[in-house]
Amino acid sequence: MLPKQHRLPAPDVRLLMRYGKRYEHGPLQIVAAPKKTSVPRVAFIVSTKIDKRAAVRNRMKRLLRESVQHRLSTLPPQDFVFIARRPLPDAQEDVDALVAAVFQKL
Image (cartoon, rainbow, N blue to C red; front, top):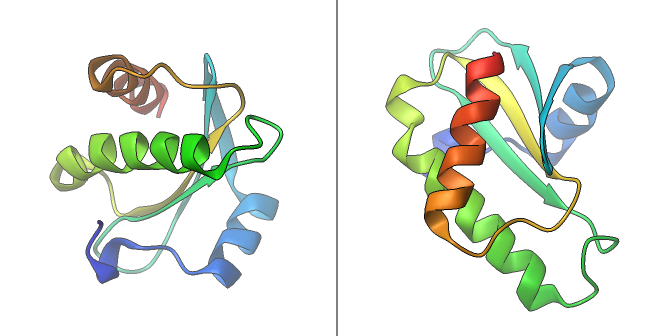
């Protein structure tokens, strides 16, 4: 689980989705916008359109969260929302590669 200071609250997610800049790579999209504090904040969205089963959606979020947590120290102080557009691979290494590729586009 991400530390509380790195979690993006729901009202901020709505604003970020409206005004943030979008980057996409494969099944993963990231919405980013600069902010005034010194730590990055992150949220994750996996729609029921991806899979109806909550267990599958939660697994995707866990894989993304773990991948981002390893990179927290290298992230710029921005707000990020990760959106799964299609099902993600089940292997952590594959998700790490996807997250790294999306951050390369930043």
